Image (cartoon, rainbow, N blue to C red; front, side, top):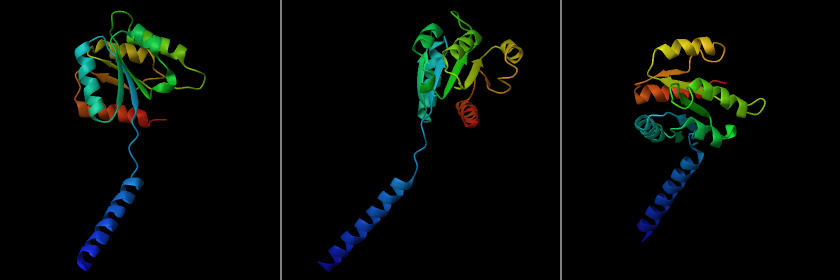
Length: 154
């Protein structure tokens, strides 16, 4: 009887220690990303990859629909394909800027499979984007690293 009580006391103290450890462990914040790309397969693949790594991802295949529902305070980062039929990623970026309130910064990463757009990006936005440009195809690990790098910048 005494032994059983001691076992219960030990188990209880272990459970308490485990609970304290869980309570003091900070959960990694979930970043919310808006991803706009006209290719449904790429949208699906990247969305699932990012969600698997803890991100919350909203996707749109139509940039006009994305603009109509965009709320700047909702997203930590916007991932934009450059070549889309309704509107280019550059035009989309310019429209996003119009939707922001004064002092609000929207972190943007452009993504494309076309090399020529990289040079256009550098010419169009030299002061804004020296670095957040992602080339398709990209490994999930490299994409996650690039996004995390951009999110950590002030």
